Image (cartoon, rainbow, N blue to C red):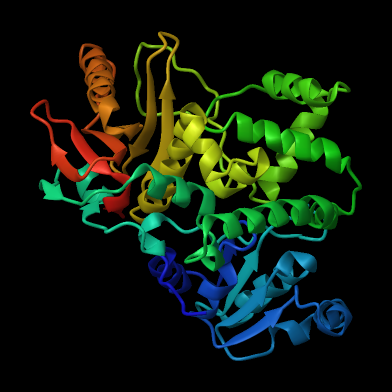
Length: 422
């Protein structure tokens, strides 16, 4: 399969010139191994099932053999044999060379068996499913970094229909799904979830759990995509589905497992640099790692989504948040959401390195642009009146169904998600 360049390629080069080793984390199938292999000269795959997982047996027998090979050396799915972490750290300490190893992992193991954090020796980088720009579904005519700094010329993008947006949501950002029909992609996502629940959850720590309850909780997360649903809400939702219910402690345990397997990718609340007298809520906004997973869990076909525009709106927001996160992290910015106790909300907040921040509303239809822009201007005005607060540097509406990127007379930018890049 032809390699499609990823935005993290640049970050990998930078990290490899800084650290002796690099850990690339992220959900299964998001392209970690393929991307890492572009930066390595040799590979050792712990997840290779050939000869009854002989590589895994070899690593447990003589871990030094795993480290031997041309550098940089890729050790794929290292968490299958956790002592590899300390072996890599010690090898880095011995030689002092930069860029010796790349470790990839689709689950975070328990600390048992891993003695050292690797601080200063092993850099870290998180990969996600492909953004629309990486998959070739965004023209890349608008730079998010430039937008955050208040720069964007008016440009015509071209029409993108509702059916096109739905296809992108159902297909998701998995590299192997690029170019295949939504119906096929949906089947792949359903099989993905089943495999993770039935096999990978047990392998993460060897503990058997109630897979039917885990699946119900994942479906609840899909129903609450792009919301700040509480543990209590999720617990009641599961109980409504099967009648037996699920304890809050179990919900927390399962959510931790999903996080460690990178099935979820929540957006934290923004507040640290605001210093406003307005009280802000502290709840995370819930997201699955990719919109295709939510669609698979809800059995949301393109035809069903056309009849349920409310659900489609939440899934579109999730698609945009995925892309905004990928783009923002490439220039060392961070993604948050804003929600205060006066019921004012901002869908996405991007905080830059210098502490400046930018506010984004996300709307599927062009008929909602005025409403979104007015909401941003209202919150900006409120913060400007607050002597303790820092108002946003730039305001923008990310839209699905508009054919141009432009700046309104009131200063708010409007950008189609299918025109955005980092």
